[in-house]
Image 1 (cartoon, one colour):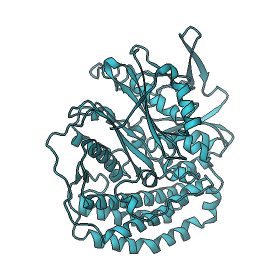
Image 2 (image 1 turned 120 degrees about the vertical axis):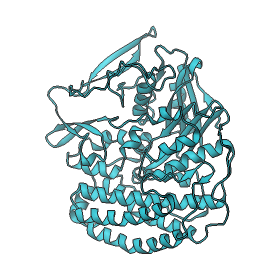
Image 3 (image 1 turned 90 degrees about the vertical axis):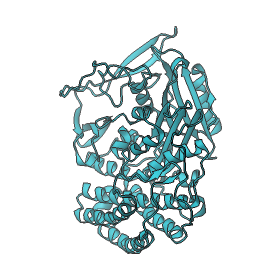
Image 4 (image 1 turned 60 degrees about the vertical axis):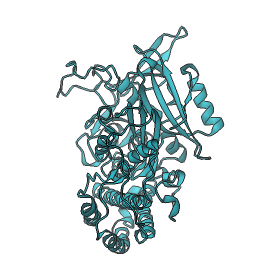
Length: 521
């Protein structure tokens, strides 16, 4: 169970700034909106110092349920901006000082806030609407008057003179049902307004009515290219809460599977980026080789994309008798094949001109947005959870954390390509030494977590994927939140793309490598 520091709402902004400036808490790992019923509403903040690795969890709440207000920290951590909009969307919490206090996922005219405990889902105030009404180009900044009353200031998002186009929601280069409203001056991007929620399924709300084993199935459907890692994080969070120690065999299997999943994801990243930029030969190469990973998954897990493999206390089935041989054969095949990838795409003059120096994200901004994974490491930020907070058997293997200083599209591309080789190296060190032992620990038929707050994170294919649970001692979680790997990446895209050409947006989005179901949840 995590220790939580309770901060009064009136002192929160000042305290948050001190923690960043004096304690080095420059990384906002997660922001979770909360409804504690009669105890009030508020948020839980997970912070980390990138210099010392120290972590801290804060809780701030307000007793006012009719108009809950908290101070915004979007001026301290840039990644807080969209997270606060998410908390407003679901809980109705107004963040005073946020420059864009709109809903993030639901329609602006949606009635109510669905993650509140008093939300009536049977109310038919919100029927399904399929209209094509124009977007309202205003945002709201909330400030307090000297007497404490709320002052709302409307800001024009796009004025009538701006040329605004839509990229998405149905567009292959948005890598899912995501919509960018892009303001252009000629071919130059002036501003990007991100619209999320087109495939939102209310997964976190669903978890509140599911038992802990039942919640596992939903994790594979978030970032479906990181299904193993997502489910690993949730299992690890529940196991830590219950005090379950899984066997060494399970730890080895989970680590190998996570790295196979990373290779699978990075191969798809390579393929889709190449396709976005017109290199169809490379696209076919990547998909051809990714199939070999999926075949290995299918033989042991029974699935290729939705894998359902990790369970609380272990894995659902032992590895297939041919698993070790097939993995070793795959490693021997992929190593020389990667050189073909670099021959056909990486060294291509067109690819280099479209990627190098384009879409630069500074290290400071990567940390402020919480843009972890390959994006952060391409900006010089060593943010790998496997190194920062080792889990499974990552503290027993030798591997290099790939970090590039340039922060551009080419660096983001090269980080992933180099990480494929590091994943192969990790698997090689483990595949011949998988220890004997049980592949799962028996658990009680009915799992109840001790009352408290828990958080566990893994290095997903796109960055830190975290699972947050608040338990009241029941068989259902009181609150379950997933730290999306993609939301921080999308929140940074306006900063990255401003001043770039519209054609560069395709390369920028491709190298950020977000997966939309992970953003929408």
